[in-house]
Image 1 (cartoon, rainbow, N blue to C red):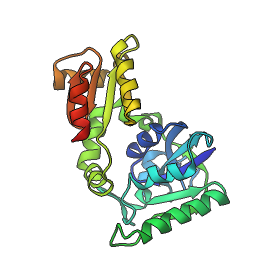
Image 2 (spheres, rainbow, N blue to C red):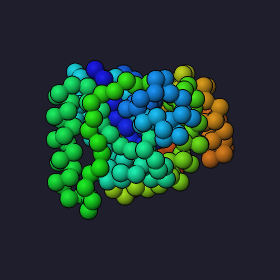
Image 3 (cartoon, rainbow, N blue to C red):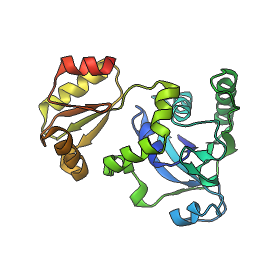
Length: 248
């Protein structure tokens, strides 16, 4: 099944959905406008009517649409009707595009529940709209967080999104496992994190030069495993240190 969400810059929306068990794929793209096959430049002009969005393909036997809605809400400022964080303009407005009447019902219920919760002093501005043609964005924009982790991290931080999420939703710290295909300890770390029910991202160092450069800068090592918890980097499987950082 498919679900489509617009949450501002799609760089920051793709990865959270990809990390959800049961999600088959999450594709960055454009939807809600009138121009066929728009380019990033055209959408950025604000004249095509499109919103930056992510289209999620998921297995409903493994993950529910309600869970995807929860992921969506906790990545955005739902009260901002002018864009998201540092990005302003119609292309950055938030919306849920429903694919059927059941998705519409669930989206409306979740929006009302958030409004009624009193979490925000302003009303939820996120639109709930019928599905419109979705056009995948250029390859450069796909999996941006994995391809360019340093730039992605800077953007998410300095746009204001990261601090807002931490302040508003009290999400767990970002956890990344930097691995290689033959790394035995990497598998032990991943098993440990799953046992603790800690969501994590995995980056293969053999395929990501920027990640290798980042680790050399932060740890002085280029081997695996390295675990990043928040802004801290741990070389090797140090269970005690991981537990301390996860509990902070």
